[in-house]
Image 1: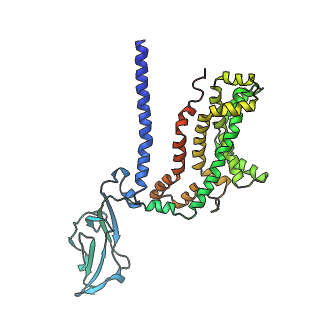
Image 2 (image 1 turned 45 degrees about the horizontal axis):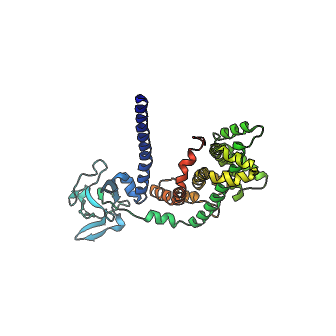
Image 3 (image 1 turned 180 degrees about the vertical axis):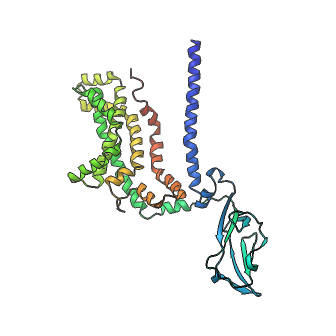
Length: 377
């Protein structure tokens, strides 16, 4: 008995450690994404999010003015300008990519043919020559700068103020709510039948539902779209509702059926003895007792549909009046997808509603996920 108790204690410790590792693996990237959403592109490029609270050092180059910017002063031809942007502090500078930090601010350097250049600590440069400049492309001035930590809400302003985002929000709600409710309604009836009603082929239907869980939905997108076109549905809300319903039903039936099987059979048998019909048992007994499983699936389905882009693109289209939020946010990223600051802000804007749904129903999530693990008495 002591060995068994010691083994259980070690298992509990291992489970707690695994849970802590999973939490860290999820929370740390989320914090990084949140911090990055308040930084601009230059900051994200210069340093990682974990250095957001510290000054960032970066080396780059700017081009001096050209011949059209020159003026004459005391017998010399002069080109002036500034190499710094607002908030930057100059650390070192240079005129060659091989030695970008060769000189300290304030030094004057001799160039070819009597030319000289000076870069002051405030970033002001002065390029002088005894003869008139003829260059049409300014020389490169390499600078090493330090930028103090700063945060901005411009990323969120750009995302929230994006053209068509309001319409896309309404489109997303129009897609998500029915695509969450319809599978639950159908799956609840099917799960009850598979759990408590006796009919031929029930075991085969359960096996088929389990098998459908592993079928990639990508395989059925084009055939299903062709079928929609052949029967006249085309691209529209009805088509995408049916598509999400079909893709979500296997998990919904499996989850609800497992939960309903674990309900106490004495309650159902007593109701039948009292003359209750199957529909009355389902509506007055099964549904209220199955609310944790219903809420659990509702969370999964809502999150899946809300964050979906592929199915919405295939079955709804890309017109401005049809785009969902993920489609509008995708357009903000550009063709190369390099606007990481916009991507980070978009992520938190898009998860606002799913977070509300999750926290509203999260107390039922674990109870629903544990469906069927313990049989009722």
